Amino acid sequence: MRRPPPQPSPPRQPTRDEAAALRAFERAHKEFARGRFADARAQFRALVEKHAGVSEVTARARTYLAIAEARLRTESTLPRDADSLYDRGVIELNRGEYVAAQEMFERALKREPEAAHIHYGLAATRARLGAIDSALESLGRALDLQPNLRVRAQHDQDLTVLRNDPDFERLVFAPRF
Image 1 (tube, rainbow, N blue to C red):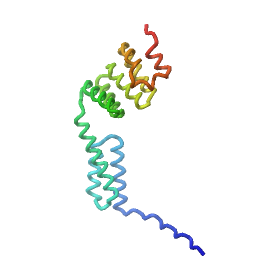
Image 2 (image 1 turned 30 degrees about the horizontal axis):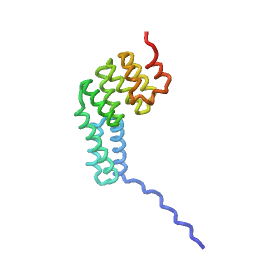
Image 3 (image 1 turned 180 degrees about the vertical axis):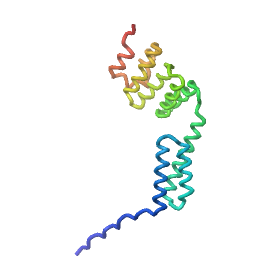
Image 4 (image 1 turned 90 degrees about the horizontal axis):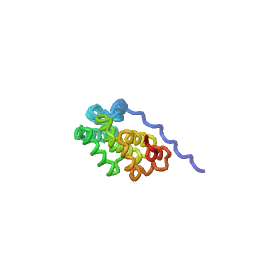
């Protein structure tokens, strides 16, 4: 006669310290997710110091702490002017770091919103990311600002994914009056 397998014991309830560490982690992670890396760093540091005995939570907090510190270092070394941000965006685009490239182009546009070449770079990046509608929107803005970019757009490999879209045809090949 076979015995039924033993029933697993119910999960252990977290101690007060573990529960407090988890709440602190959730608060810090929320700041991290919002891109508030300085606040997240401070909260993760406090968590690691205060709840050192909760090894699983503090290990995860240390990982996020390192990422937050790296992001803060990167932000402090980012260029401030539109042309330098554009150049950085082109570098990231060419490296295949499309999300970083998009961020650089968006920052550059905040400083110089009427720069056709920056809108064009953003269009190329969004096309590479597969964001067709926003890529076409950025391309349209670039072509409105600088119509001679149509020639470049016809052959640009970064825009290949847009070529079968009727809006691309309209933007790039339609006669302008």
